Length: 174
Image (cartoon, rainbow, N blue to C red; front, top):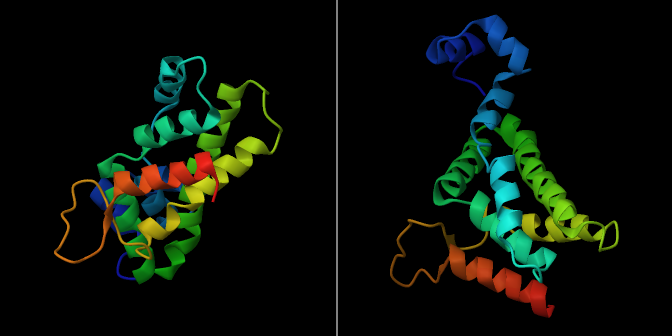
């Protein structure tokens, strides 16, 4: 990431270089951390309490996504991907952000399922769902994020349409 140095970051954030070094190994890691503000553990626990007793792991994951992927968070993630296109040194950190989200979802599913499913089930389910979001964020799929307006004849589907379509495939099979 050319164009600025760590000293610029610490001066702008109003903290010391040592504090920066205690939290981040490099400026790319600091940039990635800015984009990670996802749902808290308490929010995930409340989500599980609000689910009906006959809810499936897929239902739990759908509700978790609605909680995590707010319009603000999706916008920040898309901005991060665009920034990584400009600065290739950020690319490994995109994977880190997606991986953290996926791990949080997988842990929530394990907590929800109480061992009722095979060991790899939660990994496969979380991987499939979170993997389906990568092409939205990097622009390979024409999906409008919440709050974006559709241009005439763009052929874009809304985020909610995409989410519902994805979960319909997971419920009914491909």
